[in-house]
Amino acid sequence: MKYDFNQLVDRRPWNSSKWMKNSRPYQKGDLLPMPIADSDFATCQPAIDALKAYVEQGTYGYSTDSKTLIPAVQNWFSSRFGWKVEADWIDFNSGVMDGCFSVLSAMTQPGDSVIIQNPVYPPFYSNTKNSGCNIVLNPMKFNGKRYEMDFEQLESLFYGSQPKPKVLLLCSPHNATGRVWSLEELKKLTSILIKHDCYLISDEMHFDIVRAGVKHHTMGSLGPEIEQRMAVMSAGSKTFNLAGLRTSYIVIPNAEIREKYKKFRIGRAGGNYMGKLALEACYTDGVEWLEQMNAHIDSNLEYMVNAINTRCAPLKCCMPEGTYLLWIDCHGLKKSQPDLMKWLLEDLQLVFNDGSAFGEGGEGFIRVNVACPIQLVEEAVERLEAGIRKLNLK
Ligand SMILES: Cc1ncc(COP(=O)(O)O)c(C=O)c1O
Image (tube, rainbow, N blue to C red; front, side):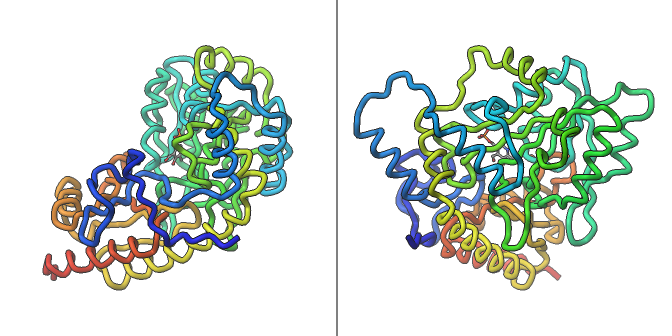
């Protein structure tokens, strides 16, 4: 089946967080929303069919999971990422950050230190603080072409007078820089964590959205030693645009960590039945849709990266290896962050994410979501180009 990713779906009647600021169907010149990491695409037909059948039968009482749900998740990991996941390692949550909070609480005591590689998805900070832990930053380095983990600095965090960090929170692929960590980088990271007896929580929420030819490596595939000291989280939320169905999963291979984690799950939601129905349908019959969506994202990004670097100087950006997010360097505009965001919103009617929300190293940047029809990407570029021309920069 051929899907049309350039068809604009009106998401406002359903209170889309991204679109609700507009009061009528999108028209040229309206506020153009490209923040928040969900897509504007209708999901794959098998998921829509599964949800329709459930909605139409009318009973929405308590349900148990289908017997084929866990095998669908296991198959997703083994067929796409070469990781054999046992059924009892998997648990469902109402969101990746929900699962992350529980496993972080299981791995730490209040007052422990947790390493975060900044700039990064903002809830990494709030989740860590809410679990009572201290944040230790290991800022990433930008080498002119891409962001990299600073391994030397990372090692140094385990020496010295402060207590040894207990956990490292990894974003893989990385939101917002779009890095897809290479096998070599992940092996280096793994050996440092094992050497210093540090746990790993790997947020792999964006793992299906990679550029043609780029390969994501799940942390679970890096060997039995790291497998026993980590948790991997993901969902169909980004991949298949299911975030509103509030369902994600976590994989915890170590039985002791899993037992502790379960204590932090008491009274918390383990996903929702409609989310699970949709996830299973997508993981069983959604690959064709996913391949077409990734081709569409590749093409939107090619257009926008090229346009930013040629028509929108002094803005700069690199092609992200993964995610549908673009991290744009706006330092050349010489605006303070509040002025930059005000200019984008009030003068250009563009809603992007403020880079400073991603922590230290995010100032001077914006994050733009291109998971939408190409017409909107073109419109955003036109507004940026015209707005920069008006600034009359020398
Ligand atoms: C890296 C990453 N993790 C987690 C989330 C949020 O996931 P959830 O809504 O399932 O908690 C996002 C959403 O943007 C994300 O980009």
